[in-house]
Amino acid sequence: MHYESYWGLKVSPFENVPDSKFYFPSQKHEEGFQRLVYGVEARKGSVLLTGEVGCGKTTLSRLFVLHLAQEQYDIALIANPSMDEQDFQGEILYQFGVKAVGNKLEQLHQLNEHLLDNFRRGKESVLIIDEAQTIKDDVVFEELRLLLNFQLNDRFLITLILLGQPELNARINAIEPFAQRVATRFHLPAFDLEETIRYMEFRLKLAGVGERQIFSRAAVALLFMNSKGVPRVINTLADLSLLSGFLEKKPQVDVDIVTRVIGDFALGGQARAAH
Image 1 (spheres, rainbow, N blue to C red):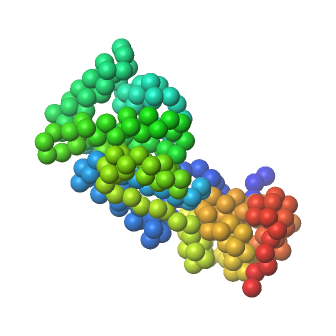
Image 2: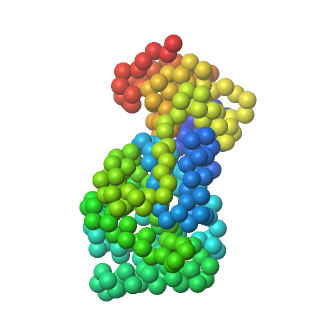
Image 3: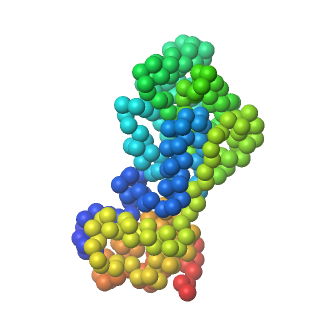
């Protein structure tokens, strides 16, 4: 038996999956989203979005993809870019629905023709690379830079969107020709306390909580301190706290429950007392 019915919930509110319907439109997330949209709609060529692990980059990118009309955009998404140069180029073609044939030069010609064909049909080409900090070789970054040479006199034929952890900035900055081609950058921070409160309330409401206050204010504050405002860690701690409260048949998730969860699963080191 799961805890949802005990707390009066229809679904689990804190799953760690990039479900766009649970996207929380914080000010920073909305700014990041709008920068992605601007980069594509204004054909800026290249956009970089970074954030700490678990801060919602992937969820944001999935929402962004859903925002782009299929009839207007041809989108290639590479979720695991840790491959060598040749495989990477083939993966780009595959994600665009093109079967890679021939050597590297022939594949570049294939890609160029595909981008030109999209242009002729009035479609925009978008390449999204998630977890871009895992790219193994800087040669791949050079290949990505060269993709931006696919352009006409007045516009790029492709928009490149890079998503990754903060160290991605340093890697790109170390390759000056590529760094100069990145038109816009944005860093997605963790939540502060008030954003954490609103985030949890938002998810609980979507899950069907109604007017019930499942988490005490002090429990949320303790949860925030030990998650450091990182959404993925908030989800983990909140989910386990709901489970523990259900197993103990508590009327509310309080500080004691959150403290035990943090201690039992070591998901924040030694729990700090809420003030």
